[in-house]
Length: 311
Ligand code: PMP
Image 1 (spheres, rainbow, N blue to C red):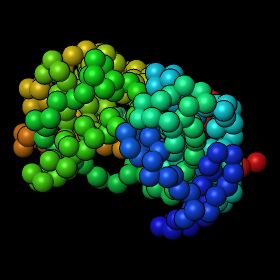
Image 2: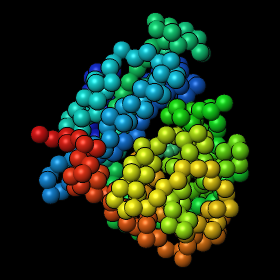
Image 3: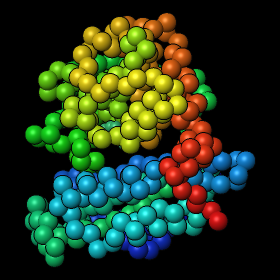
Image 4: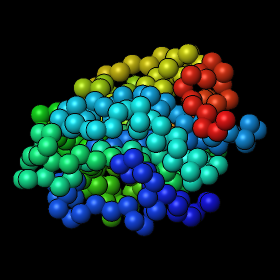
């Protein structure tokens, strides 16, 4: 299955062949980016021949919060979406590392901004695709601080995981690529470090891990919460959630991005300033190992963070 497109997408209660899962051009999701979604992972455990979904309920909770803030009323329950996430993996017989994404969208409506029940269709679909983990590779990034500002809670709240928000991250990511960097870090409206286009950030200074607060123009990242717990409980590394200055990135001992997609991805330069000694730092490396054990269901202390897919 690796590298191929899975056969089915779950859409509004049915399995649809991949090529037939379509939305009309007049849907609000297309016209105004009115869609909320989640991105989560399933990890294959070879020893157990089992696929584990990581923190499914935390992702569903955040999806519900995004829907609430967008005033989306969906006919399907969260329990049904949860079941669809499992079913789409089984139906496609996926037995490898995967990326899963449930989306809830405003469909065809009576006007551009209609949202009340009965005035606009609200739909849901769930995608699952093979996606290999970067953990265990030596992938590391050269990033820049973007000249684009992160959207804020007073205009396009980053707390809502909405498609339209990603235009902000896209401007930064594409500019960074044009300028020869792997990725970008955005500053918030106060000029403090916010996050990357699709990931939160941590840095290490003098043995303490620092990460911007949830009020700093970031998505409330589930990986960020996971890493705070692993750093403190498994590695005895203190974590402080506070505003971070741009220049702190330049003198950090270690720096990484985190997210369901990027997992724990080391950053080895910022604006061409080398981070630490330019190698993957010791805390970053250890954290990657701790994270990999947990997501593959290999650490019994956190077995309630993973859901086995196959009986
Ligand atoms: N920030 C943004 C903007 C993101 O898109 C993501 C990925 N969902 C994250 C942070 C990381 O969030 P999570 O750890 O929940 O995947």
